[in-house]
Image (cartoon, rainbow, N blue to C red):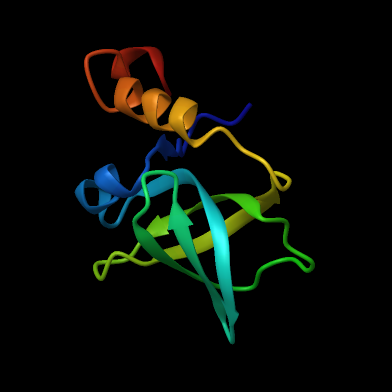
Length: 106
């Protein structure tokens, strides 16, 4: 595992505090557009993901990329996560990864 450039786990609430940094999140794909997709984060925030994305995309995808200053995400790696996903568990994980237990996460 390469830990030289870690990606912080975030949901929509934590995205803005990581502008310019590499993050990892899960979104529900809402709409395909030229050059990216519009998605909904697990805490119901809208997120634009820019870049070349694999096709076809499942309903839920994990995106690793860099947060632009406008809150969009420039995708580096996109992984299909299927058509069902437990958003509540992911939100809890994001709270721990950005809170008191952040030292346990890369």
